[in-house]
Length: 365
Image 1 (cartoon, rainbow, N blue to C red):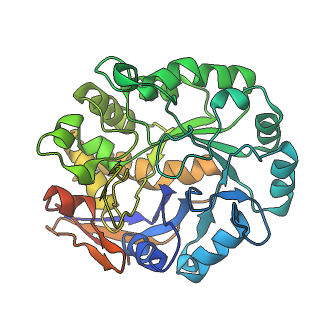
Image 2: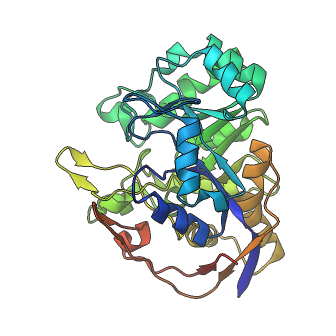
């Protein structure tokens, strides 16, 4: 069986910086990506709009140029959000919009994930001038939706987590204070987040990663599969079921692909496990396997329609650009992945780290 689909957009991806960027971009192109939203949590962060980099900030302009030179010029779309920091102002947002460089801004909870130490608590932004400027200009707010500074069972428990707390405590306040603000709830992992997005206004959407559709926390813990360690953490079966239901709801337009693919050349460090799963080169295969595990029959037109809507259509529609007119192919044929041997250490794709053979092979076309 073969599926020929429109090339898709990974609307949450990490390419980092430095000599290995071209490897990660090549993997995205090889799996049929027509474009990407490249996360700004580089070192230093992408917290300026234009101009040369400084010791404390990169600019959207310079980071885009680096990615384009490394191979992203083959994409139809390349979006780089502005990292929201204590230095972000409404004037910066307005001038960035006028320049054409600023399409989205990224909220990180302080110290909530990789290179997020520059983030500012959400309380600073709600009702403030920056969010009002974004709302007026139609700039998307990309949210890492976890409440920061929680400990123990408040952070992760069967009945509560940093994510579920954020969606009960903060998202309603954001929407009340900024009813026209376009929001992407990124890499959602919980039943609470899925339900919130499904019932929210149409200008609120969400990305879901392949790992959160495939795995639960039991898969992470049984054997300590650290290649599955990402933030937000994989959750429980009820959460995975809710995410699968959200994706496979007939006609849904709110949920779309964002892999959160994150290359780490050193996964286990002295201060803990680096957060992020690398799914470059294999994300469509993983998404197909996840949807099939959820009961989607990809041999039917209805099943292919659900898959196409999630992978290829909803994301571009939400961000306001046309989907690709080019295609790529998924073939029902087993395949495997292998690590990148970089000078810094191996970057291990999630299937390799989990000992998983893929059910599909991808051809970019």
